[in-house]
Length: 491
Image 1 (cartoon, rainbow, N blue to C red):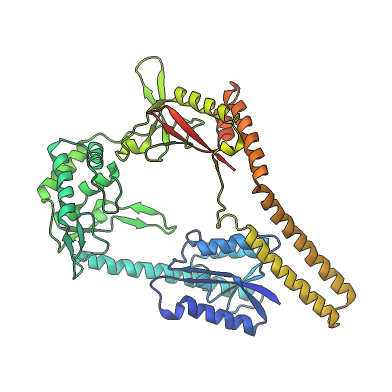
Image 2: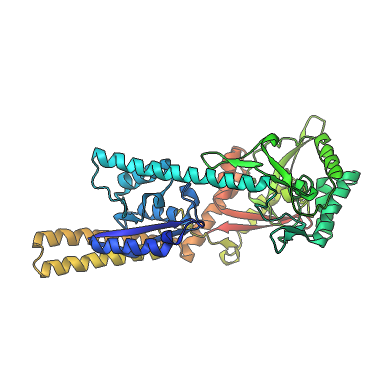
């Protein structure tokens, strides 16, 4: 009897006949009628997810990860229709081929039975996959047409921006206190009193937050100051998606701009003059990369953001390298945390050396969390597979005692299952050993000592220092005021 998994997907706009319950009911009936065991631990449901991109469906990716385990936990994946598995022909070919060739797992559509691997079956399966992709692309085009027509008539297709909220009839109405912030932004830029960076810091230092309670940054200020919505107009079709799902910006002549039914906060003349100020401003300079072994490891004690490594040209014969909080550069963080690169290097090395001398229980060791999508080989999963192996062992025993199988067949089947159980137990023991306190402490100590040696060596490259550091350090918190850091280590 085959052991099966079930994959169920439904989009938010689909009807009740495609509901998870309806798909599950049909799959259970199919499994029952075809002598297939449907394991409750192997039911994967993506509700409200499009089938066009596999990587954006979490349950689907968990199922693929589990199928790769050795021994394989299931032999077949049941779906209601082919388009439930994937609407992208490319995804369907890639994942079905991988499951079949590498995992020995077959995907079966219960409402579109295709028997065997003959030429006709291959052609029929390809036609079903192509039809599913055509339906998905055609549906997207029809939805876009409808939305574009609504935009041309001044209809609203998205949530209103900061300064507005939906009225009873759906027409955006002004939120007075937020509208005052919008007016302030335009006024400061229009008068030349402040730029977007200074404005972000100005609002943040006064405790004025965005609608979601976040601090302001330069991007948020620029978005408001460039949004035609505040002049009483509707803008649609500024961005699109290509066939791969990648978002791109459309040219202004392709935008749909129509008079809205909402009240304006900013007059068109002021808006145009602010845009002229932006167009005359300096173009954003390209940030050059200067690799350093502390990149993406040191974070700001104030906001928790990464300190970026940068270079300042002094105009002399040398260049000045430093680290600085990147959110301070956008106006979101009030602390610069500016520190010369050489100073930070010295502080980190001294702290690491000091930590190698203190008792293990005083170290800050961050326990690594298992990612369910990338690594499903947890103890709970192995125990589940072991239970199924024990069930097969019981069935083999019963078959032998009921004289359904011969002694030779029973011995061979029993040995195979016992070997599987031994492998599973070995994996469980391995995980438990890795998670033991003694093992963790020794591993961290070894990595710390190794990193300290590599960092002080003049022969070590930037890449070697980086590898040694991230091999033991999870993150480093830096506080400029006290010139102190706090190191957190991997387990």
